Length: 205
Length: 205
DNA sequence: GTTGACAAATGACACTGTGTCATTTAATAT
DNA sequence: ATATTAAATGACACAGTGTCATTTGTCAAC
Image (cartoon, rainbow over all chains, first blue to last red; front, side, top):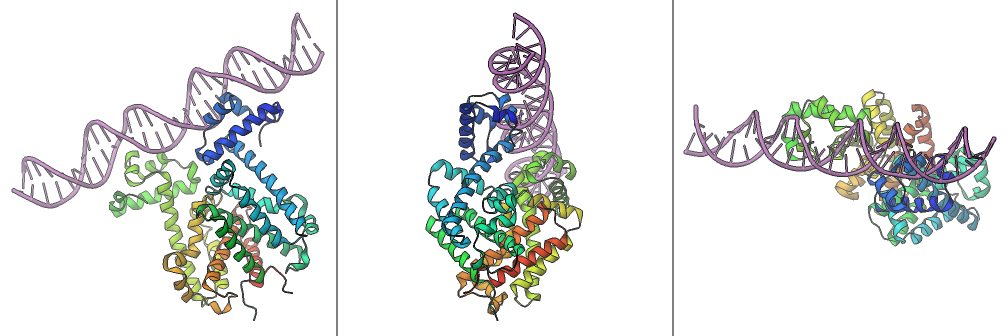
């Protein structure tokens, strides 16, 4: 978490610092990002940076988390729009994400994140989907999700179901970038896997 | 890939270098690992290290890949033992892995890898399961897997099915470490998710 | 057993980038 | 106006990487 100093910053200064960080983290993955670049672009001193953040990672996760929060809102919206149908909502969300990304800066920001996913990065992504479970508990999300169409017998199974879908969705998203799939190809693959998940992997005998 | 020099090394020297690397990569994740430590333990000069490897990552991925190759053999064995039943094989494999890991050095090696999974690390893990598909093509693994019990209609679906199972298995393995689950808890969760995967996530209407 | 040619080993060193800290400057309260 | 607290600054110590000129070792050929 950024330090208090960061949040005390006048709106304008904070904003330009955020822009500078976004620029650097779009250019290269975190581990290659240089604080010197950030402070130069933002027009502040090196020392100031350390007044605001613990270190580079602290700054990075802040920016990434902000992104994720925005995406989470989108997902919740899709869930509402599709009347709680989790499969339709996640597919629409995935689609929306790909369509929006052509913006260069944001595209590269995601790309750098996904080509160098650490466990922490993965968690932030997964929480785009699972956040409600963690924040408000499984009970809360039950209201948003139409459970009638799900093949589950308990809240515990619902948790695992969401878990599975998050994992598969995330993995698809990563591969879109690592295998440089076209949007169409990525969506096609995603749909096939969702279909498999829905119908089940084992033959019912 | 290590340079030719590395493979030209006399057996004994190469072995002690490998031991030194394993030790360091068990102590801390790659990005914290120090080459100084490795060469000191192995009793070679800093310059020599760079005769053998491009850089730290090169060395790390070599060690990790070796580990993965051993694990892949285990998985194939399980597949044979369970007569091509993919679900049983992967569960047994998961179980075997957890049971074996109490060895401190290896445990910490895995832990450091899984708490800092980059995309490359994840890929190496996923290939423990998928390697045959990549190496010998989907046709080859069809021989090992009993497709009669799988709810699929084509080789394409089989590829995706394996993909899904790898993703879920991997995610479970990561969480075993990040959430510090007991072996029993980890196995329990894994089984629940496998069961869900088998029976399908959507209600058949 | 001397020479030459190639392979490997070495460690000093240049370089890059991080995080700290004593000091200065600004803001706010009394 | 003064005291007090918060923020800004950049020089610097430190740590670690990768390089390279030089030395050492190996072995085949004569």
